[in-house]
Image: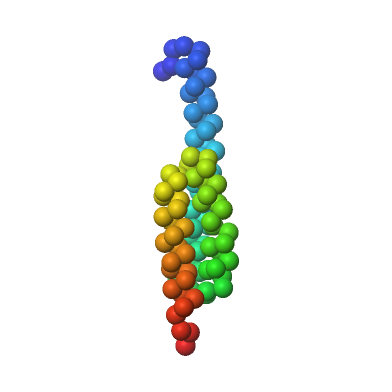
Length: 92
């Protein structure tokens, strides 16, 4: 348990920050999942739109320190690659 007043305040700040970061991480995961689902369903238009929405969310999370910058970049790159492959695939 924290003994000094500054340590107690730090504990409170960490708890608040953790809650905010959990919400941000959950939000990002939701958007990434929407892209994944659109890719799985084979809907190229919906996948493109979902990718367009998820890119700034990942960038924002990286800017806030919720995700590492390279992690966010890698996720965008891999999703974009899969969406592009879906768009290029011939539809039967």
